[in-house]
Image (cartoon, rainbow, N blue to C red; front, side):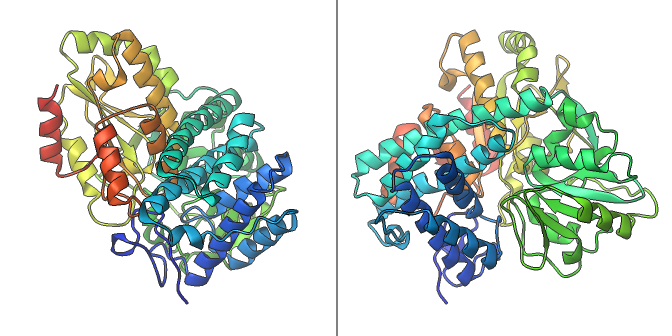
Length: 512
């Protein structure tokens, strides 16, 4: 069976996966997800904007993000549910996009993949009962645009509007998280694991972690974050639970090795799940949109009893276990979201004016399995002592256990949170530009980003909507961006691929 998918960074031959996904997705699963995407677009074209349809659109888009759902049965069921709600003649096949003119395909792909990222953020916000009418209504507008014969100029405008709406959605999610769990505070997190029963929670959803912490208190079970859940340790209403102990492992692409025969239960709240090995399949549990064949799924009731019982049955390690980050460090510091960073903005401004701080780098984004991502480790290691490094998302696991020292008492490495916390970085940049009375592009700030999946796409579109220039992107450029569209991005926004840490650092610092 054939398939076509080129939505992630590791796509085959930098062109597209056609027989099986590099992510592990089979051809039949890929085609079922195309059917689901087509159904979502058909539903949006019926112009019935209501909560039920919006929730289905968001769930359908989120389900098709890379490394979310490998379960054919659940994908089929969701597709049938969506089709049962379609009451008008709105037939559409997403394959028509894959087969159209390469520039049109490129622009429509940017819109669609950006929408998938927005759907993920909207889903997390909705779990905390936060919604935005403009964000929700845009799903209909953009999906309808994908199905129409729009011009390059019309699609380009829609691409940038996708970035605009994603900014609103990230702001919504930031408000949902902070008003529910408090503003993140600087917190040191251990990478070591205590003896006894434990559960590893991975994914992105703070709400699911909060529910699990409440259900496991006083049960003798420790909770450890994994991957993008690491920033949860900084939220006051989550860190108040004494059995939220530390962080297990590194980024998502290492899970097959790190979870191998793990004596604890594993809960996936969202992506990124990889094909599950038999050595730990019996202890993997999924919830929300993420599902995997033969793994127990926790439904909407969010009753984590089976996860708890499995953790107790496995018993954990017999003695405390020392585990380090990629570079040998045992402590990770988190909690430098916009509220914290802006509280010391006067120190940052003074350090710049006095010459103690020469430049600020934002080095972050998705991690991944393909070679070339050590670039980011080496880049951070080589940043001069008079520079700050802001970071976010799981790409930081390449270097977040490094001790880079500090400037005026401010750590040189500041972890701003999950991928959606790109909003924090944007907010800090905007506020600093106001303080220096200049544009963001005139700040001593450089963005060096890594991407893997669709949430990174919507963040990139937001940066482009804001007119941010000179973004360095890697480890490779998106396969779905055509040469003409790439030339447009280069000409208008000066976006460029990464080269080597040495060359890129030299070029950036020479421009200071």
